[in-house]
View 1 (cartoon, rainbow, N blue to C red):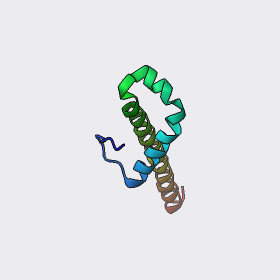
View 2 (view 1 turned 135 degrees about the vertical axis):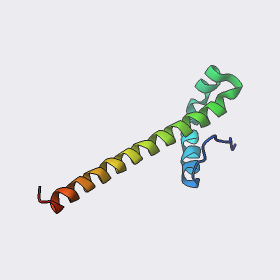
View 3 (view 1 turned 90 degrees about the vertical axis):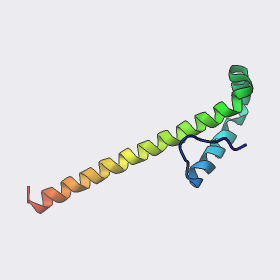
Length: 80
């Protein structure tokens, strides 16, 4: 079941989302009990949120690493 997403996902993220939803299937009964007929949509929403959260963490880590590289380069260049 493909559910449209507000923000675009890369093909890799779509695969991860489908895998996360498959991993949640054993808990589907809980989602149905709590969310009724919207259970599957909620599962896709949770999976999408988790993927975007992971992506933000990766970007933050890359940004921190890049800042460290720039600082180290500047320190070496100016012998500080």
